Length: 596
Image 1 (cartoon, helix red, strand yellow):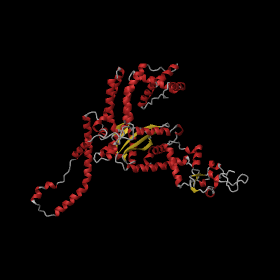
Image 2 (image 1 turned 45 degrees about the vertical axis):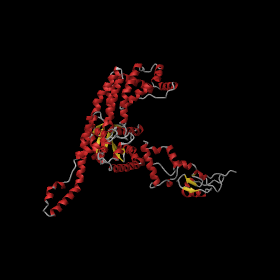
Image 3 (image 1 turned 120 degrees about the vertical axis):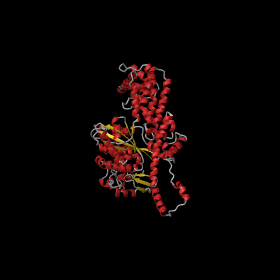
Image 4 (image 1 turned 60 degrees about the vertical axis):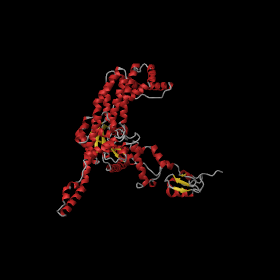
């Protein structure tokens, strides 16, 4: 007769031949082919999981188990206490999960999740919405805030980006991100995403931003503030006396708008938008497109819609439409209600326009990163863009496209050229060891950048010299006292050579020139090496200036990305989420990785 398996194994699992673990409390036990010690543990620690045996159905030596208790949960007396270290750990992980995965605060109300968590650890009960929002979430936010404040005390310079967003509940949120270099890495953090009341004018916004910077004790460390090109943000920077850098991505968007609204091109773009809308709104057309792609043995690609605020989404829309031209043509020809297709000539123009816009799209992608110095890319990208447009001008034959190229050249000169004489851009480009002089269009641009570095570096050396002079002054004074007490009579030779006792001071300007020359004359570093790591290992005192400017982002994209997450959190189902809780969730979501 087959030996009956003990009911104890419902609550235990084997770990090898000689060890078992309690599924309820995770305690380990030795196992010697009998379950006596397991039964004792259940009686002492988890009696509520056991019910008295029924003589009609069980052996008197066995203890029957009520499995429904696993589903219903344990008595509150056997759950983890609030002071339990495991309870605190699980609560923290739960809060972190809600923030990082952008889950609703009432996540713990979900029945299926409750059963799943109870099966994993029946002693743990997820926190209620009230406990989560009023206790655990603020506690994690405040702890992380203290950690970030301590981290920022170790940083010499920061750059900030800021942007505004209006939620579905008509609440205006201002996000402020902070960018700095720490331990050979570019890092970023969200300082706040706070609700802004009252008028959104320069005076109100400047007081809000200044208060945040003062609260975080970074106002004196700010190298630059990066925002969109709105006039109000220029005024804000002026009021709080911060160097302003217009978002380069926004400026590229203006270049696109300058050129893509010209007669002829606008009509082609509108036709493309109509075709895309048709396929997006018609399930029949969408299914037919899939079938056509399958029959032609082509990859299944959907058409892409333009996002009004992102010019490169239009580029992707045009590119995708041209790539599926054959399949789209088949479907349009089958449907009388379909919008008119592009002509062969229009598709040819579309290909040329796409080729012309491709360098702009590459620029947009390059300057939207956060893990490398994007400000140092601006001037080299403008140079590369200008060279590529000049090359395309020679290759493209149609008058229409040549006119389009001329519009782009005019817009580049109008919109992008000012960046080439902005001090932060010049200094960052020259002090990026990937570029140095090669990043500039002309020798005069190089000289202008070197002059800007020389002025700043010379001022830095003067400050350093002044700081070092204080203890020396004390020594000089003490020496003078000793000389006063010495015999008044000096040798004639000492009087004649008095100038040899005068302290020799090198000129800060000369030192600055020497440092710059030593740096510039060295070869550029390979692309596989990192500029920030290069400067951290450099003995050249230019490193202070380099690290000050290389931390500045080229765009306000980091602040804008916060609102993409905010939109996911503030869905229609969660539109009543308070601005305070939204700030806490976004803060944890954005900054948790800094402290892992």
